[in-house]
Length: 132
Image: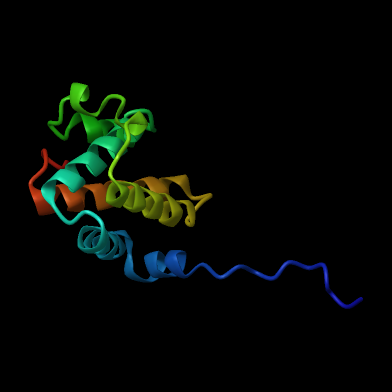
């Protein structure tokens, strides 16, 4: 009668930005922000990459292929997800999780964004060989 129980559509500014600007532009903006705010030096960025690679190595075929083609040895990232990381690395990881979760349930979009962001950070600091 009053429509009190009908859900209002949720606004998702991040998803809107991805749809409007595309994955590459949005990922570049996010990676630039992570680098400026949290991954301010090579060491922090490297630890972040190792932690993300440890997760990606357990992901879908595309994520695993990205890790395998990156020229970072598995012995470097294996178990990184369980290591204590400096606060800036944790904040960067938390932000990345929140942003990529906000595009769910589109898992492929989430993976594409995450890997493109990682590739941008790798390129910025000269870490490994980003596949794209």
